[in-house]
Length: 167
Image 1: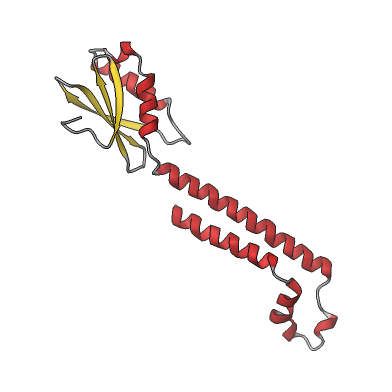
Image 2: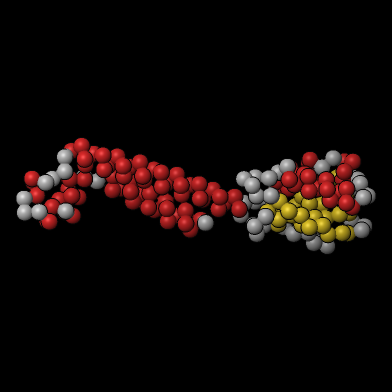
């Protein structure tokens, strides 16, 4: 996605460079040779100006599109730790102290759902550690990054990376 955004950004910059050049000279170099009397068929100043404005507007539009593509690309692989920390803060002490695994799973899913960003939801996989509490590996749907949500003794916290035995 990022590579495509770079290609569109280069295309947009190219259009802006073309708009900044002298359109009359460009016409003389590329099209005037086809006519016996090029001065008679030369485009008017208004036509050349409209072409220049169109190129500038198209260049800005393509650059904006490249920015949107890049933002979606970065959002997919963005650091999810702040979002998991927000979910940990949203877990109430009552939910975190629950001994009912299903109730805790539902509370975690609800908290993670509340941190959705641009339609990309966080998903969790529970890992039990009887003496240490309950640990969840949280990943961004379709993403590559993982964070560990730790629920112990009525408190929830988050750390970067996947949950391990040392978490």
